[in-house]
Length: 470
Image (cartoon, rainbow, N blue to C red; front, side, top):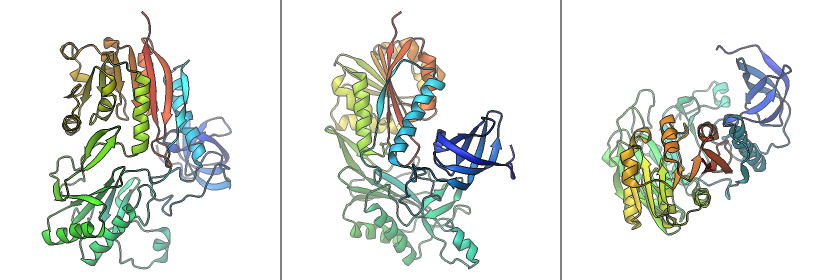
């Protein structure tokens, strides 16, 4: 539907938060209005963008009254960078709205009732909680409003930062980011300055030309660092200048990796990763378990909250030591290994081959003998033969992607009739949809939201289901 250019909703009071962090109010006819660019509690004049039968999408264009829940954004890039859209909302209110979203989805979409609500788990760190950030090089950086308005010719168009939301060809040059601990900012600024000094070409996203493509910085709980640089083409002299300079300047960087990527996209999973220095990976530890983390590794980006999420999952499962557990969408097998001491046997299933390879390597690394991993599409791998071979599941743990579980996977779970299911989700809407499909056979006992990503609308949800008596 075309944008309604001249229609505004005046004096709109925004009451709560909706999906994807938008603020929500109702117009004089009682129709729900989703407003971007505002927070709950604001009173605004809003420009209508889309008008549907049951709701309206709008954008705040004038603030008549500011919300009492507002706080001053910490980052100078707030409002342009799309990474921390709730930085202007108090953390306590962020938690309230996240928990409210989870519970509303369960009752409204899933039509689930009678469960125990466990209070949302706040993040210990509201800033500097990420252990991985990826930055893009661009020779066509995003210009500020003042730069455009000045009419002056801008000579320095190089950027090393984040893509502008919905405008992938534009990159915001980041001066300081509050998501990852130092020396993350120092490394990024040093790399940019060095690249410009030696006239290294920043990537042209439209023409697909240049030298420098992306910079990844990973850290572990010891604040040891891994740096990975993606180049569009090989230039041995300049590559070695850049990588050796990072190595010399930052002793915290334990390993430096690189890849040559002439493709049309930045995906690294089909690239050959080369080790410039160090062992090629970092080591992370959780309750004595050790995990190797390289450039391609899947690992939760908020380490402390990940540990708590795994603890809640294990607590909900309440294993006694004699259970067979199926861990669906196991990824690199982190949860499977985390619960393995409490189970008789754990069977992990995942569709991504690289993740399963990593899971098997980590199991061997940790000398765990009761975890087995299979690679395949979840809806296809569950056969009678598979269950006969691996045993009947007493407990199922499932942690699917944002789209939730395929209907065939839900059907298979219902046929297995495990005594307990622990459903971990990064999207409570699809979680609620799946729980509704299972509610004839399973009772939702308790649910807890977990805040993995402060300053954003994203929230994890963990639900415990128990099999109903026949």
